[in-house]
Length: 89
Image (cartoon, rainbow, N blue to C red; front, side):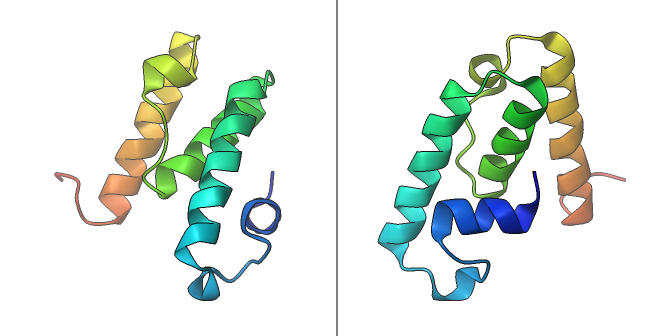
């Protein structure tokens, strides 16, 4: 899954600067529904990561049955926190 493809699918644009709040909210909800329906582990992780970047991802125990996937999601969150200057170290 490519970021531009996800942006186009859920927000009908790759430039979020002009997206209306209602469109953003609807796109996020659509993505949450798709996450709930997706069975492929890799695609679920991509959708969860996308939602996480919008502050709308479900809790790890809800999103992932597999502990390895939850660990990968924790690592992703740690990497983002460090890249945003929020991490310790």
